[in-house]
Amino acid sequence: MSFVAPLILLRIWFGPKDPSVRIHRSLSGIRKMLHPPPHGKATRTTQLAARAAANRLLASAFGLTNTFVRNDIETNAAFRCRAGDLIAHTDWLRLLHISKAAVDASVLDLADSAPFDEFVQIATLRFIICGLLLPDIGPAMLDGDALRAIGSLITTIWVSLKDKDSSSAIDNLRAQLHTHLDALPAPVELDLLIPTWETFWRVVATTVANVEQDVDARTTFSAFLQAHDVAEQSRVSREHNLPSVFHYVLECLRLYPPVSHIKRAGPAKNMHTLSLITQALSLFPRNTIDIADIERAHRSAAVWGPDPTIFDASRFLRDPERTKDVLAFGHGPLKCIAANWAPTAVAVVVAAILDTVDGVHYRLEHGPRVGGRVGWDGWRLVNLEGRDGDLELKIM
Ligand code: HEM
Image 1 (tube, rainbow, N blue to C red):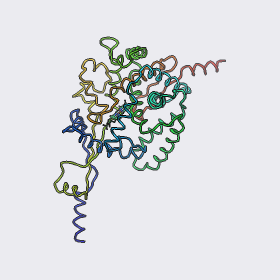
Image 2: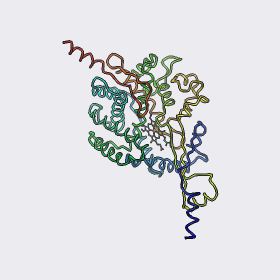
Image 3: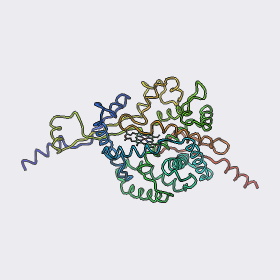
Image 4: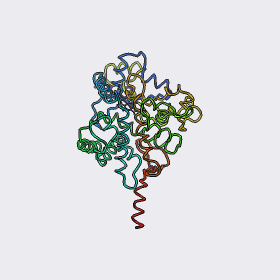
């Protein structure tokens, strides 16, 4: 007994408490957190373990087994290779064609009107599945209702992760999600679908929301739709002082980074000596969570000037160096492998949507604020042709 009492006291003083949280808000702090010195193979290994620990809930909620939830370097290398193969040697004209077909098929699913976020989810699922994951399937071959369910279930599961008591509800939602994925014309792995689609749809949605009423931006995206050398043209300004489609997408990635916080979890450093001893004995491990607050750094007036929350794609024309300060794809050894590919791919889908949402055939009703994963209240895509048709029927 006399041996146990001090241990209990030690546990109370130095034992596991809530993890200590360190938030990194500056660009330099974020870079240091995501790529700490000394650089080398050890950094990747440590970062993988810290990311897997931070993504524990994500792993169980979706049943993932990819590098985002695993701590070993072999899974990382294999997954980087698999994902890299999807976007290597991209035939951009094919993707342009698929984006048009994906949007056309998705507006056909619309009745009079539909929530804008739902529409973008369905169109981008068609684009990512047919453009990358199942290249032998055409966008029209995918069932709109199944895609609506897949998009909505992934979102609902993600949002439910914040609720500690939701695990049995999540099990149920995951089972439904797999039923819909299994009913697609060929199997689609969540391990690949989530990293390729879940951020992608939100960048498409926020870009459309911001440029839809901007005449210059519309003309630039419309000209881009006619491009032959898509990858090159995405970065070229139509006129000397006008942003390119890449600049518009980049400004969206700055203002609404879909991965707003990158987290790493692991054992604490720089702690009390006695606590370090107890940790070394693995009696009372204490954890820290490091959070790279990407959104905050992207909206800092010190970096971006007096109006950091204003959408202004031409800031990258005035100061091209600022391009490097957009950290939406992360930084360091685990930086996104699609950082160069994704902005052009987003622009391709945005161009196709703007071409259809032209105010004659379809119109976008704007809500009070731009959403993220959720929060698109008031944003609706309205089918103007459908309404005219109804009107004619009523008059007759
Ligand atoms: C706009 C779209 C995208 C955004 C904003 C984005 C963002 C990110 C971010 C922030 C990370 C770093 C995560 C971390 O440090 O923990 C990441 C990693 C990664 N992304 Fe993306 N991503 C996008 C699209 C894609 C696509 C289309 C692919 C595949 C074709 C992809 C494949 C990967 C892979 C494989 C990694 C892990 C790299 C590693 O661990 O070594 N991403 N992404």
